Length: 241
Figure 1 (cartoon, one colour):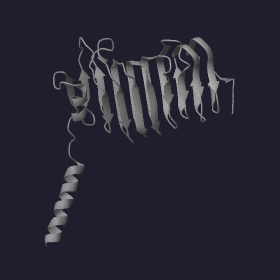
Figure 2 (cartoon, rainbow, N blue to C red):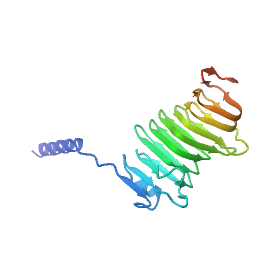
Figure 3 (cartoon, rainbow, N blue to C red):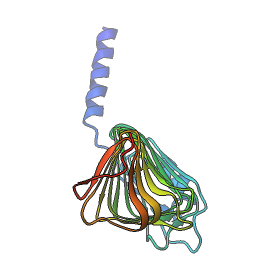
Figure 4 (cartoon, helix red, strand yellow):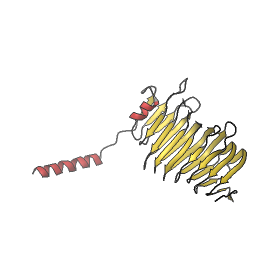
């Protein structure tokens, strides 16, 4: 009898959990609800938005988003700045969206089979996308500014799409803008300017540009060490297997 009662209770609990209404998504304001962006990220759950208001001074924080599907959104790309790094770690089916702000210390997106969408951002000094079996999408006039010695990196089996991305070499000029280490890197409507080399493909990476993507102040737009790629349907040069 006790076993039967236990099984009935277990089944009732399972059915209740199956049909339970999920908690509504909420918006967590910074600094209204939380004094720091990281505290707001820590208490956010899947579906929530962390909304960062305009501040006279940059938010001096290193930020981490680990294992949750949330949106981090600034009030204005020109007036919300994070003086630190942003590290995003996503797993299967998780997606993080980061929008409308400046990240002075660069962005790293890592993990496996998840995704990150970066929209209306200004990223300084560092960008890494290494989400094996997943994706990173840069949308709607993101800009990436790199100093000498810095470059953007695409990891193996990572699908990166840059739509309306402005990539600028700020000093010296940097040796190259992107290093593709075996992922898929696609540019549409983008612009690369101020580098010795626009894109280096290694470890079998594939990079594609559409006809609206432009290069300026670049001595050698493409260098293909052991991968493949094309620009407006024309095969790459300097193949060095």
